[in-house]
Amino acid sequence: MNAPQRVVVVGGGQAATQLIGSLRGHGYEGQITLFCDEDVLPYHRPPLSKKFLLGELPLEKLAIRKAAYYQTHNVDVHLGRAVVAIDTATQCVVDEAGQTTPYDALVLATGGRPRDLALVPQGMSGVFTMRTYADSQALRERLNGAERVVLVGGGYIGLEVAASLRTLGCQVSVLEMQSRVLERSAAAPIAQRLVEEHLRQGSQVHCGVGVSRVLGQDAFAGVETSAGERLEADVLVVGIGMQANSELAEAAGLACDDGILVDTTGQSSDARIYAIGDVARPRLTQGHGGVRLESVDNAIHTANVVAAAITGATPPQPVAPWFWSDQYKSKLQMVGLAPAAQGWLQRASADGTRLSCFLLDGNRLRAAQCLNAAGDFIVAKRLIATGQAVDPAALTNPAIALRDLLTTASE
Image (cartoon, rainbow, N blue to C red; front, side):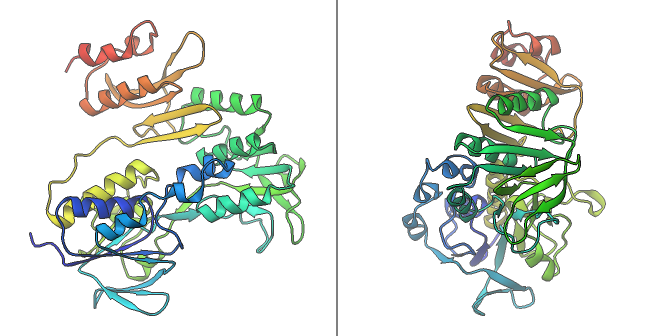
């Protein structure tokens, strides 16, 4: 196939950077233009809730690639210039300065943004979310003199921020509306272990509790909970999920539904426009959308898929998605999707420091979640990738080395 001569990439994150590297890696020699609405080069976001928030990692160390990388790969980079419109008829994007840039292939890597808590008055100070380096930096600066923090949302980002804030000496109260933290994404035994660690570190975790009222006028002063409790605080952190930045695509007439709907090649409803990373949602049969994933692994994989589609290279094989979360000194590693799943099998170390949970589909491993058990995670990824049959009793028996299942599992 003839590759397009001009590729325009909108969005400055992991997916966009990976796409550029993959395009050049496949020998693509055409023009690449990158638009970033932030004023810095694409950077790693996972440390924002951890090491960067703690002040252990400077901003320059967050960069995925240094400026020289984009120069040597012949990429025209526009920082701090948001794309505000797509003209599909003329195949141009329009930036906020009113300038147009033509494309033969357009790749949208616009990511997402944190959901707002509707009860918070507009313009109230002392209220924070976590998505950009500026968000994390502003929160860290505000903590000078702030002691009490209410954190709404017991998902991964919320719990990571809670751990960092507690490490910095704040009094932290986590409010989660569901009956437990990570109810839609983690096995109950894993979630319980994490909660126990947060409690040991001195945080308060309230489940089945929401916010009924936000206190304060111009500045945040606390919340009243749905349980009738009044929590006075200096800072509010909202971590109740993320919504896809699909407005640009919607305005251009692309098919969207909780993200930009794409086929197996990453192509949108417009043959010249692709979507990758957090904003992309697989289109399934009858026009319905699959699961929109928000992870580094997904950003890299979808970028590689689209780079192959643009250049005509062999696409990468589908792989089970994987994720991780660091909270205090605990590391949770997960592979496979198992939303709200029941029937997890448990494998715990004798000293109680490691716990792995496995979900089977028949005698095949479907998903695994490993807490402080990196070895189990590596083996689980292999078992899922190969589709080997496994013995449930062997999975749960800590006396049997999990790696031995790779050689004894039946086809």
